Image 1 (cartoon, rainbow, N blue to C red):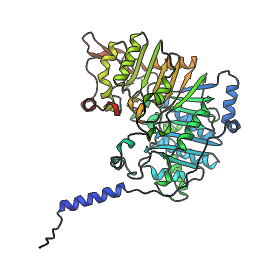
Image 2: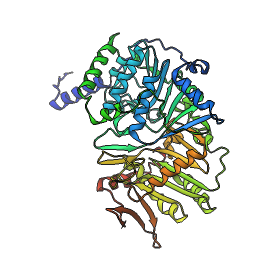
Image 3: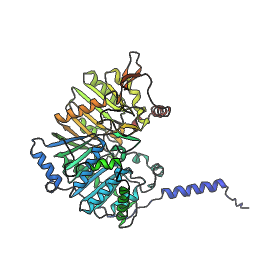
Image 4: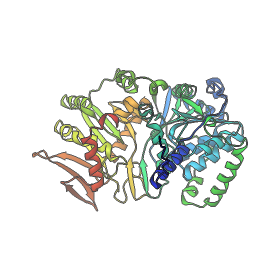
Length: 519
């Protein structure tokens, strides 16, 4: 028998080289790291902090158990977060889905290091998708003895880039599709911020090209310990793993990170954004006006990501709708609105029995996910035919519009608010009106009952429905869609949906391939 040795062709060499590079990109390992069990500051200890004293004093003058402030302006929302870091004396707990890299994030990281140096315990919990490409920086942050960083639902491989992360996720796509979407800040177990904002310039009106209109609650009172309890549940769950298990850095890497951040901040100290931030008072609590009432913290169980697809009544949506009597008005503000056949049936039944159903979402032009728009758009005709009112945020608002919903300083804007009002109750959190928030992600929020808070929210809704900010979509007698807007002080009607060919194509493709349940 003759054995013929064949030399590999150049194409085979390229294939083997490509596989070798891919293996290197996906390579990962874990390191032995002690994972400590932590709990939030006890309410009795929290009262002895400066923030605890401020909250206690404000509550002592009221009969209501909770106070709420609406944070609609992005710059004010960022200033409130920075103020909490500077004012905390014992602990800071931060939970976020995304951690962007920009001027706001760099300032926050620098402030967290400074707080830790002053004896504040810092716990930062980031969804693992939000940590892609930033593992070394987060591990450097966690090398400080007073700072702890954990990633939720992590993968040990493909961590350096989103491309490699997607490749690594192919092994178990069902698990990696499910994410921790919660956004929560708690300082000294005394003041909490919960809402729609992640960490990134676009959430705080600090991006020159595109910003999000968003909304948070700043809260004090009985609801805060409950929010702290939710953080502890996620922090101590098995899906939350120390970042050091996946990224090895020097023991004192935080010193290098601190120097890098300080040098960058010094170089950019005269930026307009930082200049305006310095005008904010540092010695006052992170609220100007508090609305008094009663709140209820709600969140999905942390294990939702590792269990079978839940029945909707077992999710945050089930808790939210349980016991709700809706007789007059339902307002949904949702960045990603995917009503599904089941949701449309419920919404149209409400409208048919006289409940005013009003929806504000992104237009095709403004959304950052045209595939989501494709799952919403086909339901518009049915909703409008039953009297549901639809408003779609425009990407560019008219000059002079109210800044509470507009996003000044950017050439384009998008809606990122997640809020629902049921007659006299308001829910603000991370929950979008879509299947992803119901089934695939974990979410958090606060349901509040307060007369003055509802009035403030209704004022915000009225601003969002103005034709200078949003299209009002209606249905003609011929069952054609029109988009009403105001431009240069004049009302206009568009008979074709605005948006580029590429956006229309993505929306069409999403609907054709029936992506609805996964969005």
